[in-house]
Every structure is written in C-alpha cells, then in structure tokens.
Length: 155
Image 1 (spheres, rainbow, N blue to C red):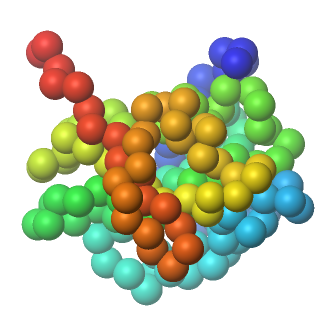
Image 2: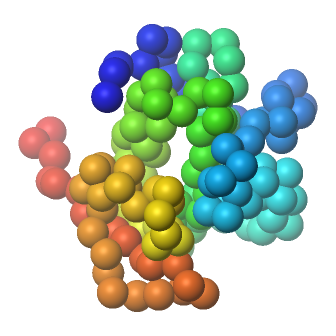
C-alpha cells in the first residue's frame, strides 16, 4: 500500500462541495456494497445525530464518510464510507479511516467504532479487517457487523 500523495482531510459537506460529493462513485462491481452518495446525503438530511464528511486529497474530493454520532447513546457506527473509483488504491481510504477513528476517540464513550459490510467477493471485508476490525457475530439485513476497539492512549 503506497502512502497517499496528498494530504487527506475530512471536510464538512456544504453548498460549495455537495455536487462534487454527489458525483463521486465506486466501480460498477462495487455498487452492491455502498449506496450512492446522493442517497446517503438525503438520509443524513432526514436524520439527526449524523456526522457527514467529504474525504479530500489536497484540494480534490475523493470520498465520502457518514457516521452515526449520538453522544447521548455513544455507539458510533460507520454508516457509509466510499472512495471514488478513480482514487482507489492510493491510500486515501486508509488515511480517511484513521481520521474517522481519531474523531470517534474524541467523542463521549468513543472507545470503539462499529460498521457492517456485505460478505461477498470484491467487498470491503479485507480492507476493514486490515484496519483491525473483527466480526461481532451480528448480522443486519445480510450484512455482517464488525467492531474496532481502540487501544487506550498513553496521553
């Protein structure tokens, strides 16, 4: 895995970048694994307690993150995550996930993060397992749930 050639940041989705975020898409064979960003943004608009960010590499939007973020019931769940087809394999996904993990660690009760994935060939399971996620044994509508428990910080 190569290091990202540009600084990766998570920026709010706003009027200036929403169209670019909507235009991002995964490869055709990955569409069964993640909803289109326009659908995710519509869900975020209609939902409370959600954290939505565009993944940027330098000045270019390259991905999208949507996280359930309820500090009253702290169970942080990566609801959506994608890196645009043209930007996959460049290290942006790993860098973005590390930023998501850093964010969750700042939240009340942020000692772990959950996600779910479709267990199929070509799916994101190897990526998530490579980040340290382990299956919980729970299934949601055909998706397997996984969790990453953060190591206690020395600070």
